[in-house]
Length: 373
Image (cartoon, rainbow, N blue to C red):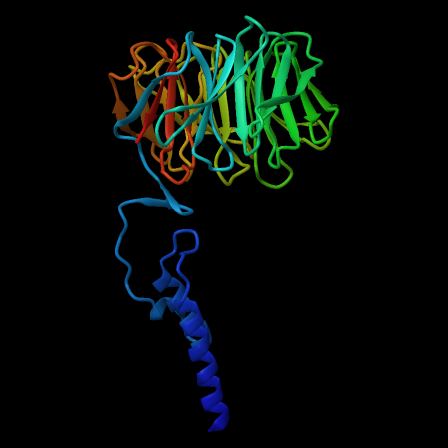
């Protein structure tokens, strides 16, 4: 009898401690946690002891739900000339960065649309790519170099030189200690920026200009690149070996590539043939193709994006500037937002959202930045 009472007291104390948790875990309601714990300590099926949960209208991605954009939150004249690239802060801060042909990189507060910082490139040379994560921001351009700044001090800490032609794209690895760049000289380079003097660590070579790239945050950090010849390649960051080659995926060139969030198997691509595609890297097959008669891609660096939960894909049209959102499971067009961009779209980014939840940004040829809610 005493053993039974002692066991029940222990179970009761554990349930009390769980009930004090104020935050849910990855969007799981507290009652789900408690029910699961009760099922485990009671020795029964946890599912049978859970109370029925109300269906939520918002998909959950961590603390912030992935929200399909429906209206403009802020419209900003971000640059004097066309905006070439847009990227959200990879550490989920309320920041989005843009690069432009006016040779500047600018950082914006997604909560109020205000300019937070501006960084200058190489004289009058266009800036073609940008990435930002935590305390590091980098931009590449037509002057054949990639500049790296500390965001907190606004000081340039590196100017990466080694490519023989313009650098078309750049990405930061997780941890902000390494950078990868792609160039019209048909090479891809990895740089170590963790020390006072940067070092060039690895070079990948191929037969076509790299228009775009992405680095997975998953194990071994696989790299995917899109090329002017319409092909997509995957690379091993540790050895520099080419792990996958899908030739002629798009007619006219690949303009954007992105790993599906949480996956190293599926890649979203955008092409000059005005289609978006999801590709399975395990068997080189096209899983789904997205197209619309009013959607077109007109530049070599037009970017598209997965939603943070991988349920939707979004792209901007190069002629009318409209924002298109498709369902990533069945290919159906779910949303088309028109009228905000007066010129063709140059790119779309879909971030996880910081404390204010703002997640989707689009840029156009006139230098306008639209933050969508």
